[in-house]
Image (cartoon, rainbow, N blue to C red; front, top):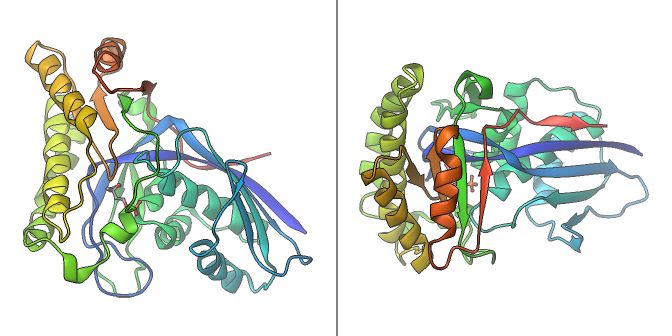
Length: 323
Ligand code: PMV
């Protein structure tokens, strides 16, 4: 038996990823830029056990489906030259599958733990490319701070990996998460973005404009320009949701409290607080602000009708092994 345990932090994209390009290995149609979050993470233990006849998984103390996990573990087994089945025990310290990027932290933690348990010692770029094959956003959770995921051009995906832009301490930023629903979403992002026939009429425009959005965000980060970072994040989020809404059938991830929280963020901003929102494939609202404003933002969001809870977090570290 060989085993390893890893922790990976969740991330949220400021410039969003949505859509796949042709080719094997889950290749993104667009690049993305994200922040890794300090207080939301997944711990995953992987044990390769010759006594097992099939892979087994447990998530937050309940048996979990291995349909997406076994093909992913097969990639690692193939690379390590082993055939042993694995037992996975994973725990999220936040609601699973509800738009808090549990697939990002989950697949990143699984990538690090499973490669180590299989006897592999891969560099971060290779880990990122492997994690991408579990979930596109997971490629970014291999790194901490501000992170860019490259779309890549090559058919084999060897240039589709994430890289760090800034370490967490290089530019302290806070994210206040307003939780408006803790149930798992009905259509997860992988399914939501994969069906070519159901694509929005706006899809080609989404892909065509992504490079300039990424370039603008890189410049804002280099200049530590929070207003531009925030404005571009809000724009990319709303553009993504326009794309989702215009998919056939339209994907509606918001609930009334999501919309109320978006207005609350804009009201705060109109009153002078530097704060911008972003939302992924779920109903939670993530407000970006300088750390000096996060207490005030959390108070305002907690008072929005329908907001169940708020969590404040700074920027978090890269994925790492636990003893
Ligand atoms: O790779 P997935 O299936 O976790 O998709 C991520 C999609 C969004 O969260 C909506 C955007 C993003 O870039 O994280």
